[in-house]
Image 1 (tube, helix red, strand yellow):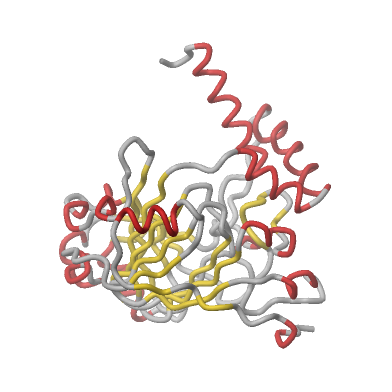
Image 2 (image 1 turned 60 degrees about the vertical axis):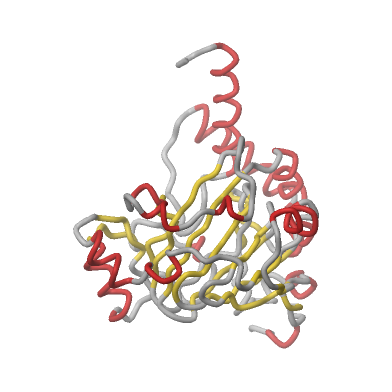
Length: 308
């Protein structure tokens, strides 16, 4: 039985007008505080990036698109195979307006759209010098839904076309968000339709909520849990930058309990050391144990000079 009336109403995400780089760094970035900023950018992308423009400019390029994104429930319960299809961008832009199912080209590196990087610059607000940063495009229909998850990197997000509703939960709420034991960055809870019989602690989770409109900027700090839902056919740009510490991830493992410690240790050995195959879950990252194995293996190779 679902008891949504027992879930506390999220507070509003702070919303401000244009600020300087120094003010952003001092008041939000260094404080690990989310914010929506209005009227911050005058990028050409805000006028140019539309589905029709992408279809005309990159229509023959093929992308892996999620074509059957569930509307309810955590996407991480589904495997990718039944939902992924390779389509041209022309086919996809038609699909995003006509398909009965939500569809999504998610997290496609801007380098897959040659020339697009000149139409925007996250360095206008954030100093990216000396940091590892990756810019991506997200193109989808109405009702696309991400999982409730956190990213290891900080998130700079600009809504270009359409609107997205976002829910945010601070890192300390991890104990109430029921991460998958084998993938501690992804929640088993659908925050719009939570099953409090299965996940009763979610009723204690305190979060924030807001709508990001075209041209607005959203800062998602490192390890803040978030879910984004498109209210219209949508185009977004984001930039991941920096990395959180391994200790931050281990805190989430600890909050999730013994089942996560067991799953992480199992996958470190089974998927990492033994290189066993695994089913990729929808809108979920690499299993946490495999992720830790890759970190350790990479560090050893660098220390030993292997592959350099």
